[in-house]
Image 1 (cartoon, rainbow, N blue to C red):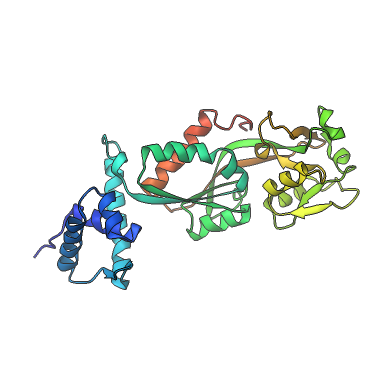
Image 2 (image 1 turned 180 degrees about the vertical axis):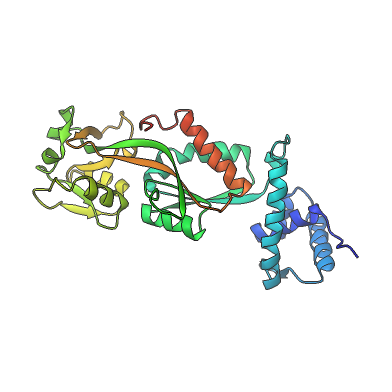
Length: 307
């Protein structure tokens, strides 16, 4: 005896499971709420189990429902892969994608990628984990994120690292600072001035400590922080200068901040996509991954240089 449910019933189930609401799910799959309820009833009757706990205020998966949700998601994802090349499929897809990235990437070019992605897949929900490089790596390894964008992870055996771009460190300073007129400066020159630094939990700090083992600051920094974006705020407030990745700098028309290239040595970092080895991306994540690569090829990160 066959199981009496179809693809429409599975899609209705996934919509309710993801959105936690029969009303929102009905809108997402473009049917009436009574029709969606009938599909869920049909699926539960066919399986002989209750998939949702319903109250007047909420809809939640039962224990059996959570187990079934994983299998249903995989089945629908496999079908989605097979249908990727068919016209108009993308506009009706449901799903979700979680991306972990360092804050400079989140601020610099992901907004334009997300905007373009949302135009193509308006019903796919996006979660952005903007965190330190160490946390991005951990999120990818644990599976919390579908993939990550960071500058750490190329040495980790559990992670595939594909380089997107290479950028150098520069001095961020106010336009009225004595260093602003220089065409380049050394790290020794930087450390002769009051400066803001990153604390030891920062991935950028680890990278700089390794690259600058022969260059020692002459005085302690006036302030330590964890994120580059915070450093730039402190520089803008006049607390000192700071060494930051070029990607993190605002545009050339910024009224307060400017940058000067650092030399002796030139320190660079490679920014790339991190994926867990042996873990295929869902269709939603694969399309987002593709959008990032296409944006980079199209010059969406022109301030940084390819390796």
